[in-house]
Image 1 (cartoon, rainbow, N blue to C red):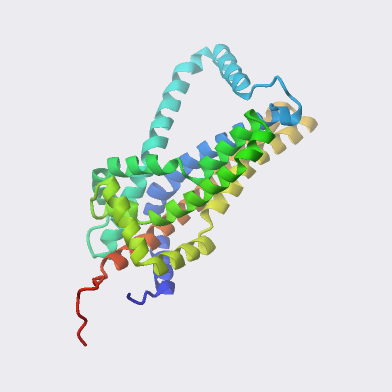
Image 2 (image 1 turned 90 degrees about the vertical axis):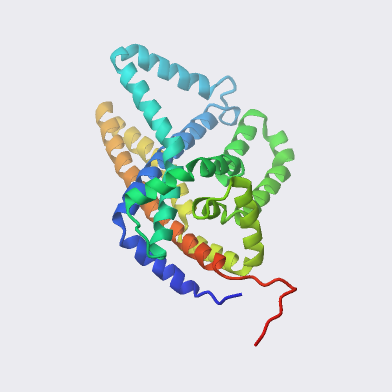
Length: 315
């Protein structure tokens, strides 16, 4: 096993990230803006759903019904906005489901080609990223079910709708799923890179990733720990996603009590947008940094020749 200079990998990755603002903007900031926005609405809905549940004494409340009624009333009141809103939501939905995956594929292509001295323009990344898009999208759909965020949403659904007794019974299952989720994420760490860089199929890439993790478990675990300590992407995103709705609601409510309600909405909206863009940019930088670290690690590990037990080592 080769001696990997972890500090050099981290430093080189950070230098590369900071020197590529276009990469951060197109494939870091924009996809992060999409995912963070959806995350904010998801968390806001969860908060509202809890407020309308039996936990806060509203036995007859239905968050979904109230949200649906609000949207329907808004459409009836603003008929002229209906078509533009539908078009906007449709475009946003398509971008949300497709662009983050394409951005990841393009980023890995650009980073790997730069490392190997090839052309590494934004156009080159998009061109080659498209070629592995469908396989990467399929893999993300498979693995997304086991993400930590998805498990939290499922847990909140159970405690709201099935009650605390059943939630306590299912708690060991959720803990087991969280452990399984962590193990799967670790084992399939390099799947994206086998798909994007080597052009392998989804299950072939998952198998190759598991094998590479086992053969290079020390490197993988150490880099994972370093990325947790340095990146803290999930922590930042979680804080921002929880803080932005609370900040908007808090400012809007306070200003509305001391002045006009419309002023409170305006100020809350401006503060929320600023926080959204700031959170998206920070997450975008950390995403590109993370892609770079793992791409460099993948290229180094896959260039190493692992000897079989049958081969004879000569001095």
